[in-house]
Length: 159
Image (cartoon, rainbow, N blue to C red; front, side, top):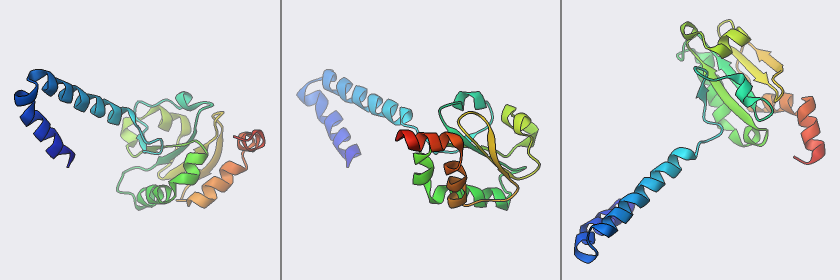
């Protein structure tokens, strides 16, 4: 529908107001594209390549999912489990990071040193609070987060 309106606007722009209206419509379209790019889903999984865990200190709780390949069934299961219930993770300031390429030797992989599949949950202060060699559901992950000292402080403070 929107595309039809834009086409009609552009089609009539020469007739009604000349190039100025067409330019305004094009600028509005460009602005919408910029807004769409800026709106990033906080739980959209991010590749560990070129990321630094220090960027998340005191801001987010990283969940890092490692595997030796993205075809690993444990990796796929873990990512599906995280995608099933995003709201509790969002409430707890979680960011999801994945690394499925051991040959890329990302800084995060070198820092956390996984062997094959690994799920690593970190707190906002950078401490590793949970390290598991098999997939975990969101309920278990949020239970671990809610027992972290920083999360307990957040709840006491009303945040």
